[in-house]
Image 1 (cartoon, rainbow, N blue to C red):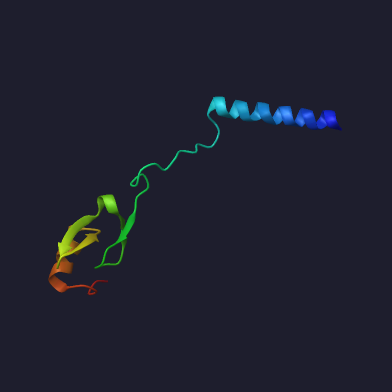
Image 2 (tube, helix red, strand yellow):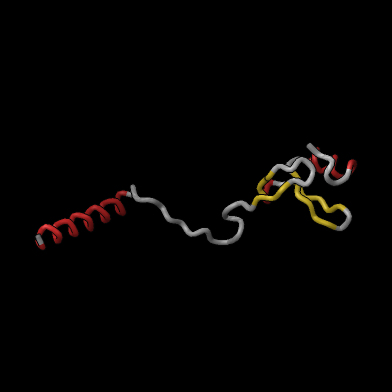
Length: 85
């Protein structure tokens, strides 16, 4: 029984080594700095979520807002907050 368990252990170790060297294992990359994973922001006009790095940024009445498109940003400035879809 002990020999069988030792054999299973060595087979498992060999399997892990083969996966590592062939590159078929799961890649665990660190997230790193903020921005590696997109922060989502909510468009205050149409209520959709967009990645912060691609959102249109406007400062309205001293407050920073993020929008999904330039059209939403313009409509927000014209019509005011909460008037969207």
